[in-house]
Length: 218
Image 1 (cartoon, rainbow, N blue to C red):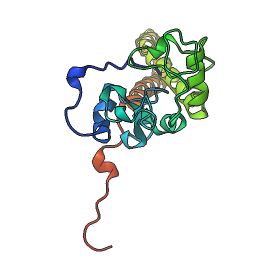
Image 2: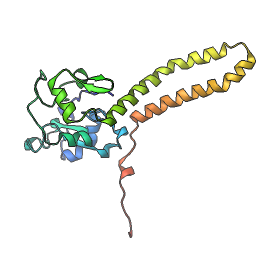
Image 3: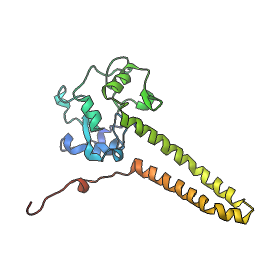
Image 4: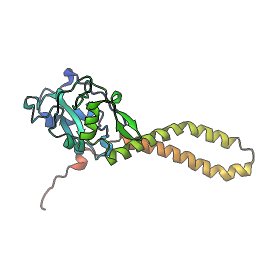
């Protein structure tokens, strides 16, 4: 699980609507994942379970309510934990309790992992870890799954080696005996790699999948 520096290009800002209308665009801009915990929407019920996050809370900065530069794509959990909390303005030294602007700073450079737990040597990111509960059990599991996915993808190099070893077996009877196991192993590795890829990228729900319009009588 990695973060992405959110590129806020004024040329791409919407010219109509309000923040409620811009969630699909914010999702694409944020690589379809939570700006804070990096959880992909495919792993949390789709876009419907994500919120439009006001980096500077609209309750404290009402003039920024529909300022696209202040808006990000966040999972509902991180958004609820953050709420209207705003302890101080961000600082480049990260030496104050504060939130770090994901359009100006790469989170990959200020956060680190230790036994799948998020850690940092700075005050600001540690404040975010605590306030947003960025080491909640679900995220620990997701990081382990992500690591497992990487390991499985690395097995792609193992498949040709397995095939080559199988072909070098000179005993025909032995080769026929182990053939089903070799084919099963290759199939298992291939399917696992595809499943892991789909698990982390495929968006599970579209608008029509979660909207139900009743027609006629009850």
